[in-house]
Length: 311
Image (cartoon, rainbow, N blue to C red; front, side, top):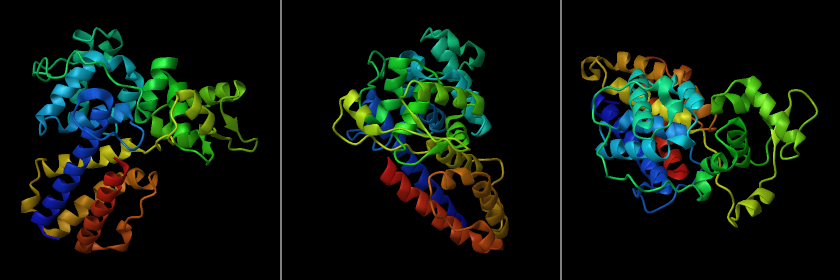
């Protein structure tokens, strides 16, 4: 795989990721897409990924300003702060700008601890402002539950269980993707079990699940509820890859062996993106030296197809 081929494959994956972002923002009312999202929207993951790519997509800055002034009250400040640690440093810096906009223009004082004004324009005023977020579409279930029950762990836990029908999920399987502590997840899950809203196993480790059919009737949708996808690790991987491509070290000056080692490190440090979404990719340890470049191309192809199907 040549350097130019590596760059093209990376850019193509980034374009497909941007397609996911636009589809999800359109579902939430930003008028950026005609087709709704296919899976549940993770709003904190959506904001963090959009912050990563806003310099390359100017419209994302406009949408983020709109969301900071109208939709930020439906975001969890605690969760987005925890999840931001999984993204490259520039994303965490831009989160401070988003928080400053949510605080200053959105008048949401929960964002004060994260607010870091930079002086840069936070999107163009008036491009999407004045439009209320849409939270009733099935893919916006998590936001709808937060609107009804408050921005708290229980709403997020319900959304994840509703999007993961059938299997039993342990506290650890829930806590890591949601970005909360195991203690907070356990307390919330046990409360929901006591309220007979969630089922639990009796053997250790305790597993949790619920039947989505009664919830579909309650939510007024005849369609099957969209599935939960682990967007956070996927977006974190794509943004880390983009940051590497645009970093100080110029990939064009590196040998194939060095390139192979660098992309191998990125994939191995972001295995969660593939494991949690059950994506079968080439095992890096099976491809020594520069032979991994071809396997890396196949890895990006697998993820690209998944993005198209899960958008």
